[in-house]
Length: 311
Image 1 (spheres, helix red, strand yellow):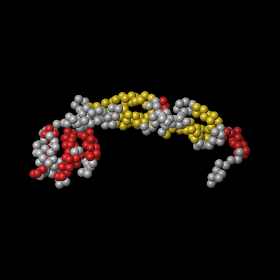
Image 2: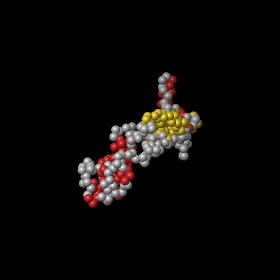
Image 3: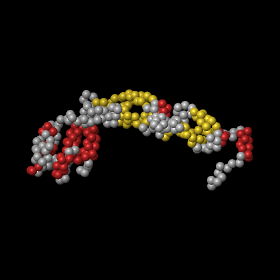
Image 4: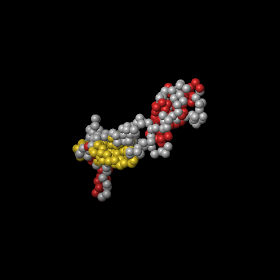
């Protein structure tokens, strides 16, 4: 009878915690479950994984197994000590069915395992899936409904994974910001053994916008100004996601100054703000009259923006 290294089967160290053992089991069980796996040896692998987990998940059985395991390697000829019979029992005759002779000898007092049968009681919730969805800032402000295609798979009557293209309707809530996720319950991977399907999580991305950029729920807009609008002040119509508003530009404004439109960003609790980043643009001197005007300004308005700045 060959020794079975249950730790090696699950791919964990002998010092692994109960949580690490459970995570390793769930990962392997999902990979090799005969209902969904495409691996050639899926049934044998699944059998070995379940056998290892049934021992290592139980603190008392794991302790009993560890008392002998340090002296053996996978595949070595194994015989428990004469006084071992009964010390590691704890499984019924029905439990022993479908597992190795090693398992039956070690935990069943010598009863050999019967032929393999699939554990009908095995259930595993479907895997959560992740994807992204690109929306406009207008969709994020107003809210919207979108239809998208998702390539997934279902299980046929024989338990085989079959590809299926699904059309999903997605509701975009007003005020959602970039990086948030929209959860579609039950639209993830199929469950195993009648367990529910996983969920689909869509991470929101904003499409590039010709005017605005977003930071969280705040919206930023570069606002071009003429030199006289910046110097004298002006009332200017400004676009926002909710429509145009009149904005008073204070006299003496400089490029880079930020002006706030309260609660004109994406809706929410609290709502975001819209920030106007001022940018002064100089008119081109592309005519003799324009050049003469600039020469007149230079003569009548001596101004050196570099003065006192170390230039």
